[in-house]
Length: 264
Ligand SMILES: [Zn+2]
Image 1: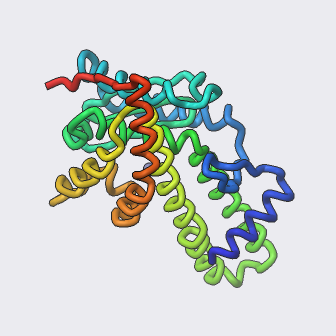
Image 2 (image 1 turned 90 degrees about the horizontal axis):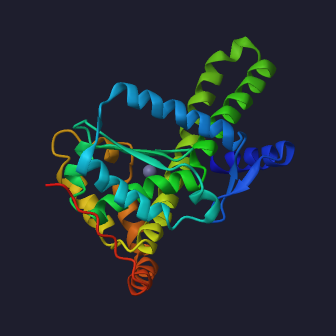
């Protein structure tokens, strides 16, 4: 299935001239403009704000302190976005960052990420999804998959409906799923380096995942269940740890030591 998706993507890249490179040099299909994506981000953020009450005061200052230390390390063009973070009053452990710089973190996640370094691991990972245009790639891939299927449908005729249903399922699992696993690995590595550059201890990313696992007897934390393949993630983080530690030491000796006080 994977070679088919590569082939299809290659054809789309040539015919639509809609390919970009991710920060790790991976070729990606991006059919939508930044403006379109930022608009989608804003809409989703507005909806979130309508549904959940925001928390202010020391809790908000804490999240903002961590987020702004991370944003300060972004490449100039991305730093210039209007980054903002809200803390939402909700027990489910979740966090997100959206195109346009909209970030959110639920109070339930602050119970699992127990210090500034662990919180930086969560936010750094989420910011990295934005940096690497993952939302654009995901939406583009979905659109392209639907486009491909509708072309097939019109060629094959209605009597092959059942076969096309199977093809549709194949496209879902064969094309979309590997992409999102790749996105996770990419966000893990980029996020690890980002937190280290900002002077947060990258080893906290491993502790965070231990905390996530420990909290998951019963219902797994939302953030964990939307971030599958736990074992693979630990492997990725460990593989990137030497470089991240070197960057962390460099940041520390350059005087970068965030001191975000966690409200008690
Ligand atoms: Zn993720």
